[in-house]
Image 1: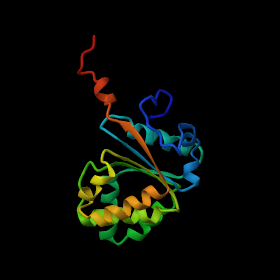
Image 2 (image 1 turned 90 degrees about the vertical axis):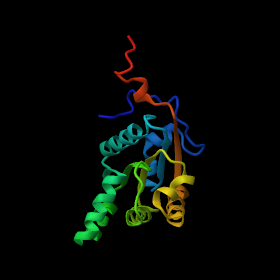
Image 3 (image 1 turned 30 degrees about the horizontal axis):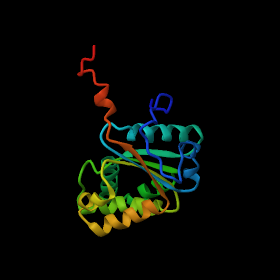
Length: 181
């Protein structure tokens, strides 16, 4: 289980308006803010997000975790079987949504529109925690629509904080394949 017990914060860049202590207080959840963990592969984004989610569960917040591709597949299935509104209501009932790996897999326009609906419905109503390896300037390519990307970014950054994890790959450094005897 991923926690902050042995998490190395030394490489984490917190924004001026969000300290490590502020983040760990989980106040961002009640304030309906977004956290975007941004950095390279293996830099601790998912670990940090999952550890926050576990902390939130221990404090009785309602939390749902999805990779972005899992969420998009769920939304598409719900759209086609007529249960989209029920699925969106389930998502809306959460206190915080954890969305992992935004930008790893390109989306078609329908997928991007469905994801936008979740982000838009969350704006000022619930907390979002997102991990991504892409700078905001490249989100238009991922969503195949620059205006949609701009609208999504606008909603995320308005009440959001960018946490930079850098590019140091922890998994690679600790790989068993790198026989460091």
